[in-house]
Image (cartoon, rainbow, N blue to C red; front, side):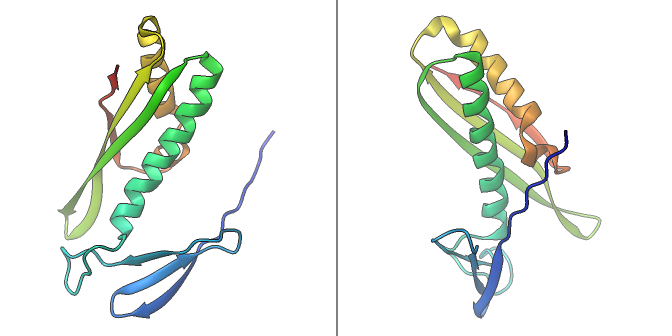
Length: 143
């Protein structure tokens, strides 16, 4: 059975290279801007590149949490760093690589192999990474 879900994000330009993201179903807004590496970019504000990495990271976490629950992997903590690589290829900017560095502290060290399977299944089932052409590399740390 097919399911469809729709998500609306609105953007309103504020000034210069700065805008504000909002959604009719969310209370908080996010200020965004061209990153400082580009002409007239603004430091210390979320950029499309940061939001791209955040989409990957947050979806990977949500997928991990669901699969870990199904596999009954008990952990004390989960955190993940995502680094993306932006390159100029054929005169176009592309995010060519995303490296995810999940760190999982298990309650029982005997679940290490199972936790690694959960991480691999999370990579395979993450809807964001499945929807993009960026290469995804996972380098987990299990404690």
